[in-house]
Image (cartoon, rainbow, N blue to C red; front, side, top):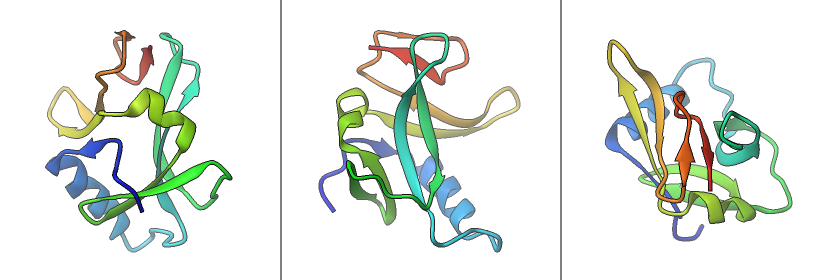
Length: 112
């Protein structure tokens, strides 16, 4: 494992650990962080559990949470912070990306 290009807030770490400790969690899967084309601003964040390992994947760990990311995605996600919000108006993961030149209203799409 190498130095992580992004970080998770304490709330995100707690939520990811909660998901991983669920009785129905498939332990063969690892957290995947990345991007894909699409969304109203050009690119969309990817955050989910995935059993597949791709040829360009790099493995990282942040506070005991292993995750994988395609090495090519580091360019778009370096320095990003992933937070978990559990409020009345917002519930879910929030991406704070210093590389985004524009974002959309939903918070999951961005442009660089």
